[in-house]
Length: 94
Image (cartoon, rainbow, N blue to C red; front, side):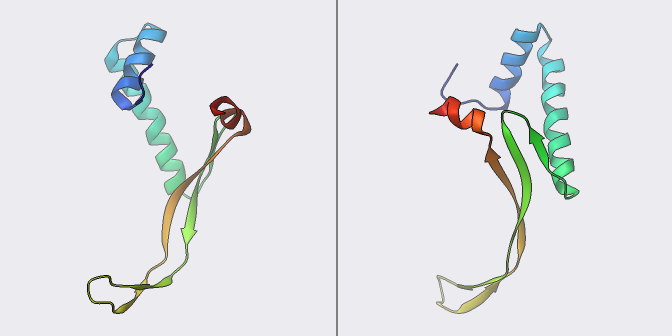
């Protein structure tokens, strides 16, 4: 396995390991990513046993400073995706 696992590499691995065409493997990867995205967008959580949990976290509104003008600004609240690795994943990486 290479040092970088991107979508193309993941598709190649799935196609090879599962005896699928690259097109079918790409559709499978897209389906998985789309389901995770849709669940998070709707406010749900994704819990993949032995891998980790994805959830949406809310960053509160805060005061900031414009670096160009040094003027104080309000940074609005925002939602960001978060990931917490499962113990099995943490142990495997050690």
